[in-house]
Image (cartoon, rainbow, N blue to C red):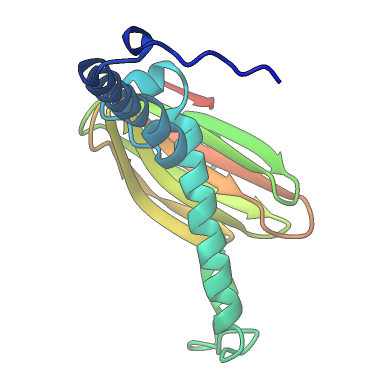
Length: 212
């Protein structure tokens, strides 16, 4: 039987070399944590490298999906103690109240931009505007054929903010004021069983609007 040679003492790493390797490995792990893991998994980008590598947006979408899943689970528990339709309030149902923005929205010709899109079951879309800090944009969006979950938020290099979230919403309108210079807008997802059509109308202080 052949036995391998025992390594010489000089070939073994010294304690100093082991400590140095351990420190270098720890530094590499910390760098990966802040530049890759936090942006890609949680949408947190303290160094700004995540945005350059397009990892921050992926992390934000993951967090949005996680929030939606948690909200869906809570909704399933709540349905055991709630009726299928909210009681009338002065003869007006909650569904009718949620449709009010569609009835009161300003005619499309008076808006600066009109962005229509269709969402299949489970599909999501993100549309954002480039805005300066303190800029304001009026908006109105209406869903036809169902309801959507949404998250109104903004992001910039090393910054992120969520303005408003909603589940099972058929329409919304208001004024979006940018908390900082960057991209601000909406993420919608269709959690229903059929296609829905959405029309987003905007006007105000933004330089551009596009699908992300």
